[in-house]
Length: 357
Image (tube, rainbow, N blue to C red; front, side, top):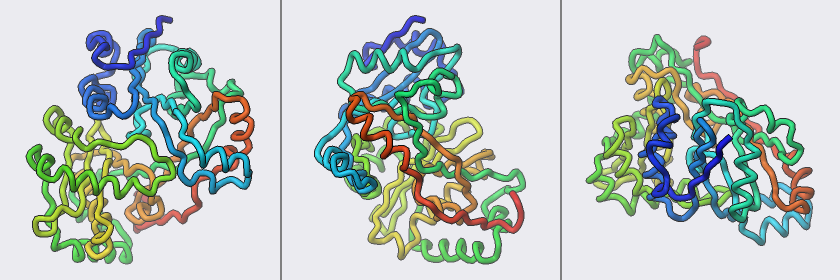
């Protein structure tokens, strides 16, 4: 099967890419990926043409901050703490739980991995589990380690919810009171659908708000550039970004992608100094639920992190895995036992509904 990899979208023929791209997949849209790559020149972008299949991925340098805390192996802790590593991730590294590929015929992921690792210096290969629903070969590869990662949180939108109040009516008394308190605490805030002029005006503040959220991550990968918001607002009517203001100060923002029957809540920035007082993050979740209901979606994707907290709003976890491979045989030997023991943090699933939804 003909395999071609472009590392620069300016060399990618748009007709060749879109010939087999599925129109309903927003995340492989040529213009969407063009904006992503042009606004993130701090890492490398891969556009893979494999017969009738299309894949998007990233190569980036990672400082593994804090991961060594999971291991008692002195050698491994020392190695992980000292070095940066080059990762090849065969998906969008900022939106890891969406299909950044279009599959129209059988393929072998090993062909793509082999070509990339021959053409670029790669320390680790990471492949998302959902990619392998179409590739049976990966499960036979002993080089890859299957790792369970933090679950994705998803809320099913009931067709009986006509507006936010009908969602709230389905909650147990305890959780309805929590919702009421959230709206009371956040009442001084003004929520605004942002335009390009707003993004330009508050650009510096918004970048800092986003960096606040990502600064505690154990994996310090490529930095997200919020300048992409201007491009997405201009070119796509299924992307919205909301600002949360106290007087004229922006305290937070949230963004949403609408893709078919799913609303994705992504790219959140918060000033944590005001978060508790004004219940900012809780209000963001409520607004996303309200928007999903208004748009008659079937699912709302909250993404990962703060899973127990999100379950208070009815979100449930969907297990996620990645396939991980170290290119260096010595590192692979050290990592295999270590990575096989990594499990997502244990948390308590809340059920806020009076009956099954």
